[in-house]
Image 1 (cartoon, rainbow, N blue to C red):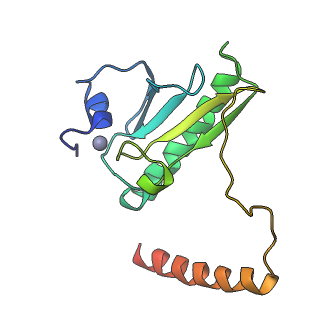
Image 2 (cartoon, rainbow, N blue to C red):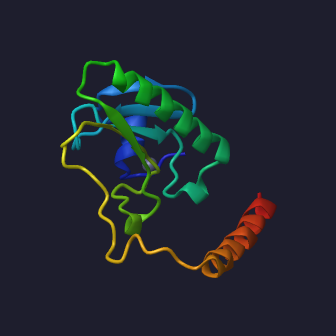
Length: 149
Ligand SMILES: [Zn+2]
C-alpha cells in the first residue's frame, strides 16, 4: 500500500534517494534531509499510514524497537551524541509535516539549542480532583479503543 505523492512512500519504494540506515519487512530508517543535529534520522513504516490510528499496533511496536536500537547505535557511532530524543508528531497540529507516520531519533548534546517550548502557565499543578476527572475520560476512551481492536 503506497500513496502517490508521498515522499516517504517514494523512499520506501526506492524511487526517491535517501541515506538508508536499516530496513526490514515492516520499517525502514534513513537520515532526515533537514537534520536538527548531524545523525538525526527517521524510522518509517513501509505501509502508508498518515496517523498512528491508521497503523497496525504491531508495526507501531516495531517502529519503536528500531528507534531504540538506533538510539543505541547513535551513541557509539561517532556523531556528536550525549543523549537522544525520540519524537513522534501524530498529526499536523502536533507538528507533523509529512503525513506518513515517522519516528524522529535525534542525537542531542548540551547547548545544541533544540528543545520543546512550554506554554505559558506550565508548572502549575492541578487539583487531584481535576486530574481524576480527566483520567476518567481517558480511561473510558481507552476502553472503547481497545474494544474496537
Ligand atoms: Zn506514505
